[in-house]
Length: 232
Ligand SMILES: [Zn+2]
Image (cartoon, rainbow, N blue to C red):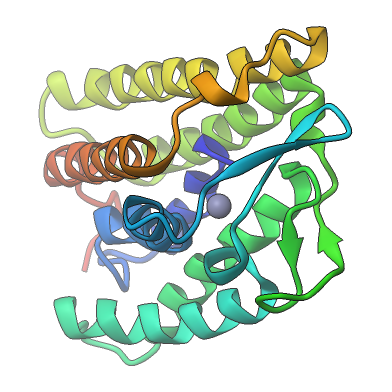
């Protein structure tokens, strides 16, 4: 999954909580933590090389995306995020860990089978919704839309710009989803996908990290202007 990953991030903005346990922008980083590890490994050439198997691209992501890695990364990542924000409640650890692990569950739905149980494991999991690019687009952007509607519902904008800004971000995220997932997906479908021309390695890793940083930065800016509706 790509943009759909961000949907669970708003969950902590719970109805009735004046102050969420974690800042929303860090939630937006937590849901992509596994892909941040993937992007970093791709920069060093450890992961990310794709091969065409049965006419579809299968990516080599054993260390960042195995089930075992996802469990371990959820704990390590949550500890790192706790050290960054030092939240007022230890419960925040579980919020971070669950957000990080949600990445693997959502990837399981869309990925073509390239998720092993442990690094080097032969059984590859993935329900392959990305094989249906338009359905996948509706699924991912639908999840994100629900999340944004919920976010708008539990916060109030301090000025007009903060009622518009989230929807500008949403549109940008939709465009990113279209170019990064739908377009190559349609090419795979009609047999014109060229693995050699697809972004890989250093370029893929750096552009992914920039996208993740940009989105988290945008959310950090927007959430300052959209405090919770609920009084302390
Ligand atoms: Zn992923």
